[in-house]
Length: 278
Ligand code: NAP
Image 1 (tube, protein in one colour):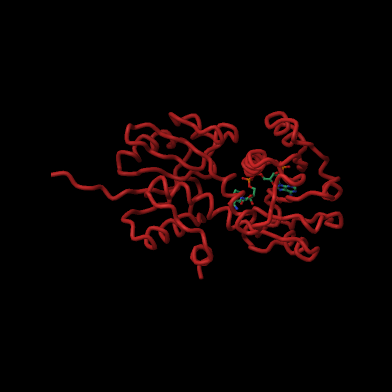
Image 2 (cartoon, protein in one colour; image 1 turned 135 degrees about the vertical axis):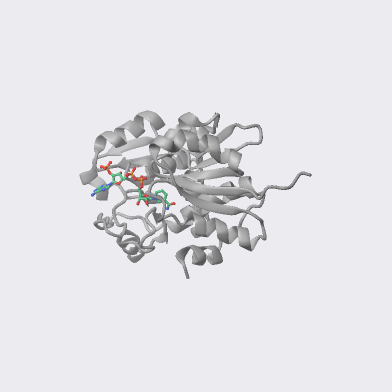
């Protein structure tokens, strides 16, 4: 007699106890009455390959991937989406029935959907974007901004070489500007985003003079602890629409949940509250 296996998903990383993804996916599973589980797993670098071999056999339909495995899983997957290849990292794996591992990156999608939801009038084609920071998250943000047709991206990073490397990879839409000039590149920008880890709880604030900020700009921060960073507060004081980083986390998860469990989940206020723990 055959029986239907309960689908399992989860998130791998190290450390992993801080991850909010289990709370999010478990909420959606309950909300839509889907039988399934989502499990956080602390996997060391040395065990990554073996974990990817074993998890599908245990009933996993896919997993999220976080630090430090996001880059390495690209080399271990059988199929890699164009956007994951461009970013050089994956945050979502799908374990296909034919045994193949499919790697995708939905971080940039989550970033753009968050802006669309938080600022419905946002038109990325109508002006330049300013991106602060050139780390892993910036790669996903830049790829998605190019995909939605931003005409120019002014990129600035404390370590200039990292920004220059992104210019080489992503092309001439990117103009690299010295970090000390960060406050002088805002005029007429329509999209402004902090992708540095500055402003995160336990880190120094992200401080940049916002005098030149266009009031029509949509200002976003990838940091979501705290939800309202000093940077977002200053942008709000300058009269701009602001979008916090939590929505990016929620939106990047939605396509993965759909692929694994067959239902597109809603990203709404109830979802936010569950993840915030209230
Ligand atoms: P990362 O690869 O380590 O990059 C960190 C970035 O922050 C680099 O640009 C780094 O500049 C800059 N930075 C760090 N300390 C700095 C300082 N004291 N002064 C100036 N710049 C500094 O990290 P990541 O993965 O890109 O993540 C960046 C942030 O985005 C984190 O806060 C993360 O939690 C958040 N994030 C949020 C989401 C979401 O869903 N909302 C998704 C992904 C990431 P250098 O190159 O000079 O070191």
